[in-house]
Length: 288
Image (cartoon, rainbow, N blue to C red; front, side, top):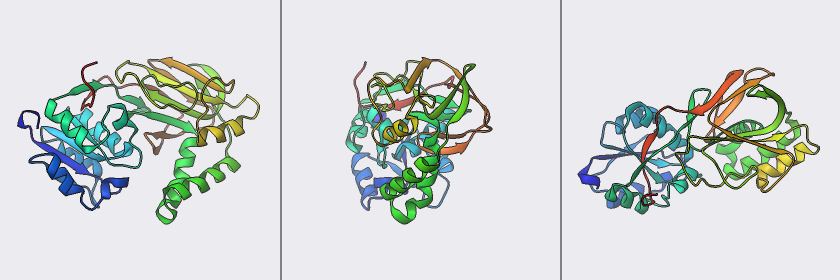
C-alpha cells in the first residue's frame, strides 16, 4: 500500500462483474487492510462519501460508478483508485488499469495523475457526454434490461429508436444546425468519426465534439451504423469541433442528456466545459 495509507473500496454490486461471488476475498488478497463498503440497497454517492473519509477512495464498477466516484472526489479532494469491474470500463482502460492487480500495483508504487473532468450542464463526466438519439437509446434499453438482459434490451431499444428518432435543432456557439447524434469527449479522442476509442492524454484541457449532421442525405442510416459500429475515417455527415468551452442552445425545448452512459434532464441552454479542478487518480502508466 502507498505508505500504508488507508483504503476504502466501494462495491457497486449492480455493475456487471462487481457482483462476482468471491469479489470481497479477492479485494482482501490484493489490498492489505482494505475496508469494503457494499452499496447494496443504499445510496452510491453517500457510500462513496464515507469511503472518501479514508486516505484513498476506491470504486469497483463500470463507467457509471466511476462517474459517481469522480463527483465525490471533486467534492472532497480524496485520491481515487479505480478497480475495473463493470460492464463498460472505458475510463479504467484509458488510465491503464486492466485488472484488480494493476490497480494494486499502481497504489503500491504511488503512481497518480491529475486528470481533467468535463462538465455538461454542470454535471461531471470523464469519458463522453451526449444528446440526440443516444440518451433515448439508453432510456429505452434500461426499461427492458432487468427483464431481458443488457444486450437483447439494447437490440430492441435500437430498433424502436431508429423508427421514431427525429433530428434535434440546436445552435453550437451561435451556429445553427440539426443533429441526429451528438457526443462531447473529455479530452481529444482518436480515431476520427463517431467511434471515440482512446485518448493520448487526459489533461489536455480540451472538449472534443462530434455529431452527425441531419442535413446530409441518409443521415438516419448513418446514425444507425454509428450506433452499431461507429463510423471511422472521413464522412460528410460527421462534423467535429475541438475547443475549451461550447454553448449549446436547443431550439426544441430542454434536452435529454447523457454522461458516461447515465441519462438525465438538462436545460434548453447548456454549457460544455472543463471543471476548474482536476481529480487525482491512481494510474497504470509510468511517468509520461
